[in-house]
Length: 554
Image (tube, rainbow, N blue to C red):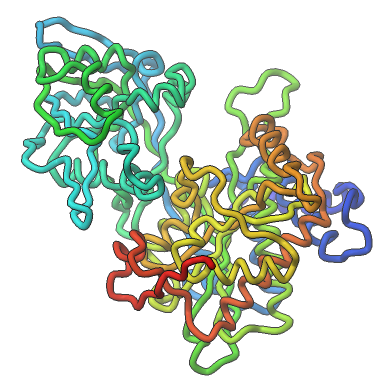
């Protein structure tokens, strides 16, 4: 065992002893009390925010694994263990100051500093770098041949920077747009031979996120998945430069070209636009230091009881990591991001679903999956999807749990992606049996379907949903909307996301029973879940799989 973990191992009895007595909502319900105990452990200060590659997250992973072992699940990680070890290259700036130098069409030079007019990511190579190249504007930078979209067509990008607009056209479905914006820009730029990707903002993006807030992301570390061969994995892995620039710098790089940046922004508000070469050059100067870190996924399998259906697997996933500790806290300031709601509560849901399901195993097998590095960009789930420890062809569904809001007694649930496959009606039926509603996505513009750990499963063709508590309360009011708003404003990725939030543990128990019922019903269903006919994700990622006809509401 790594000696750096020994102090935390020794402290584990203290964590349990120091846990406050059960409070609101636990009552005589053992499930509520057990759920609270899991959250209390995972969100304890001694685990220091469960940052990946830290002793605290290792302790959390071992805690989950031992829970699986007590239940009698089968280890489903690497080499007969509970763990799938995921390796990352973590890059940080070794330079005190990073710059981008723009040589304009008029022969002038504009220098941007990282964190001011520039947001530049660290590189993949250790040491100082200067990377220079011409620039080509490629519109939104999207590529999807099935949809007839290719913003890179006819463009010469070899050795040059691809300049792209943030996001995607408003005319696209928000979830499809988010998927393409997330994946295709880097992939297509790399395939076209570009050295880097420079993002400029649309009017919509500028209104949504002021540059002053966006630029706070400058100088943050960057994590990249590493495959078994030590090479980078991921969308556009190998692209040397990723940068964003403010509107003034964008105006400078578009000067003297086919359109001014102001005209480009105006045109982009109306729809897609074609690209064109830009004048001048773009050069970045930085120095990077690299560190290799690792962190475990935790996987336990409950074999199914039916000789035929046991070959199929239903997954319930929840991420166990959080964001660690503050880098430079003030004296006496709370420095630990405990992550009680995000996502100790989701992990507790998954663990308690396992506790319930082992008592009466369903026909299909169930894989309980505690992912790592969700907070770094869904990296643990992404790694599993690329290097699975079980045959991906056996997986027929994923139900993902991430940050349910459990400070309100909810009256409805939301199944992001439920309208895309036959998992939706299963969720609706389980909710109805518990006198809960199933509500549509209340914020479709946020494209939540692409933003949690079910998404890598989707990209492997697996019908999936992301379950969240809804906005209505049990009295028909909107108290749960207010509760979510309060949490997001005051506690999301803040040190206040800890056990002293006003958790309703009875609501947590209800949430767990609902998720358990959904998993059980999926695992006992006569047929495996199917994508609906014509759904974008089903067509794109499971083109040969049987589809279900879309049933219109009566």
